[in-house]
Image 1 (cartoon, rainbow, N blue to C red):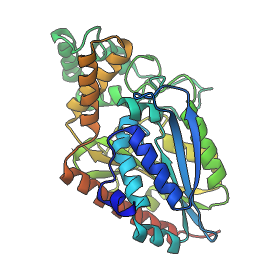
Image 2 (tube, rainbow, N blue to C red):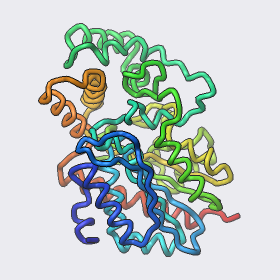
Image 3 (cartoon, rainbow, N blue to C red):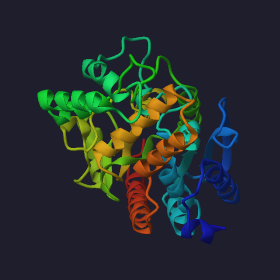
Image 4 (cartoon, rainbow, N blue to C red):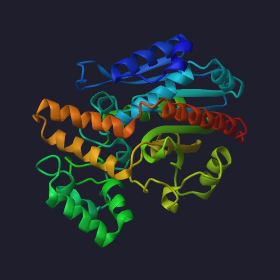
Length: 367
């Protein structure tokens, strides 16, 4: 099974990916925890956030690896996790480094199953980890764009496309990207919606971080994403606080090409409510070092179009079957590639990033 997982770790569906992950994790004698999500899968399968913990008795640090924060991106992230579980050499390296592993499979299983970035409530989990007792950050640009991004018909007509073009002409493309993707909390039927309350998936995940991160002075985190940047390139996007010490530590681990969104050096804008901020709630005494590993797929405008089409489908679930299938396939193509070259690039870069994290955790200062 290990050889098969290493040769072809990418699965054809969420149901297959989950089965293979659980089988591989149990074969490694890792502890497995599962949290059911109360929503139907696209194949009527059960949906669950699953976590495997591999913790040697002498572990001195923890490395967290998450997949499918944005559902459909789980095709890539799950494949990386399965490749790791099938790699005797990498797991032995973690053992020698005295690093425990927490592999969280399908943080958003609904989106993975249905080819959506968002969960069963149309929530973008990477905009949902914020304090909901405070007023949400405003996003006036999104409010202006919303009726043109998710119009009454799909595909959008000339009027909607002209309105988007006019916004870009007036404000510039960076402002357009920021307005669309930073996160918004006013349009539950829209794109990049951060929710009105903490999602079930993030509540489960916070509990996992608390229980398995407790006692570790140093915690590394790789959150696997797709959809931004050049085809096949894995951008290492700093996911921590705007803190010079954290940024410099991440650079020592992962290199000077570390991208920092709030410094304007990333393909991603600076977002609100990102999942990585949960580490500060769950493990306040730890030194976290976190990145999103973002693999490029298609051009940004094509990715936005796919995301908007899927949001439209949420609002019009009785759309013709053929149209719904085209929209879901467009989503998969926007966030995953069947090309063996792309997949090889992903696995090679993930392996390097994983080893770099082990080295960083191995030499981290001890309390």
